Image 1 (tube, rainbow, N blue to C red):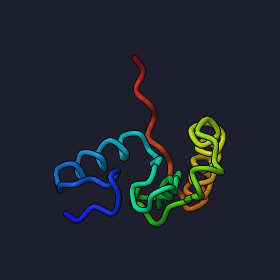
Image 2 (image 1 turned 90 degrees about the horizontal axis):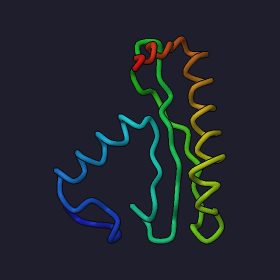
Image 3 (image 1 turned 180 degrees about the vertical axis):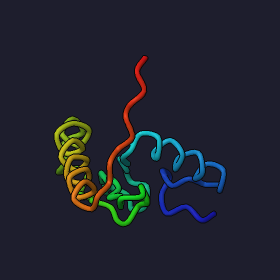
Length: 99
């Protein structure tokens, strides 16, 4: 695989592992994965069957986006926007397992 930056996965297996972890978490935080100096947060928009239809994304220069805000309020708002749109499209999240 051709890397765009040093943060880009270098093998198919690294990419698969990264995707699996992000799918489990329910959102993506990207730091210079495609273009050096660019950070982003994205979350999926699901249809009523739980299939991903689209994603909500906020991106910008790393120098302008504070890491705490990116991993806190920005991530939270992106995820909430994706959840609201998904709900309007009929998606219902499965009940969370109790520990």
